[in-house]
Image (cartoon, rainbow, N blue to C red; front, side):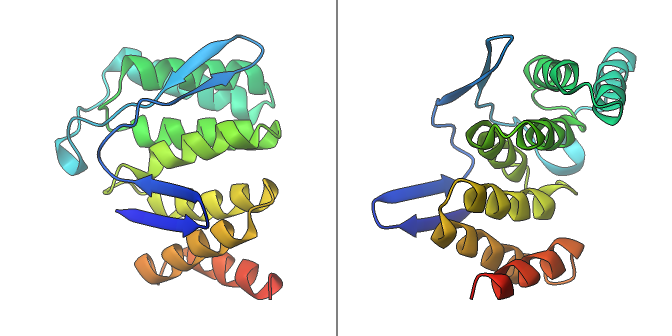
Amino acid sequence: DVTTDNADKKVVMDDKVSGSTATLAPAKVTVAKVQPKQTGPLLNQPDDAAKKLYQSSYDMLNKGNYDLAANGFKSFTTKYPDNALTSNAWYWLGQVQYKQKKYEEARLSFLQTAKFKGSSKRADALYKLGITSKALGDTEKAKKFFEVVIKTYPTSSSTALAKKELESMK
């Protein structure tokens, strides 16, 4: 669990879902916080439909079609909340939202990614939470996320990036 405090602002990441939502524009799709039912290797393996939706969303991201990519990843996280690819879908949704400068939505997506403790994207998501916090003007929160990455994932490539960000913020 990661908890950071910044005066009256508090971000708590744990396995409990707060029920808050974010809205994707322009499709007006609601992003609900989803709690994974299982973590680690017990997550459901993607079937052909799940793989196809994930891959087509990823392809749209690579082609620069961010609206279609966002809609696809959002659809994936709704249809497959406890799938082995769900944490990745949340991460890439956050990336799309960040590229679109939808920083608050990106922050929520990266928080969802970070809830999957065994995810290969968790360190990257925590780093992106720092980057997103910085973009939102909350440098104290950004520093705390960077510090969490460094402490929790000392050998991650995200740690090297987090260290550079911390240095640049001194």
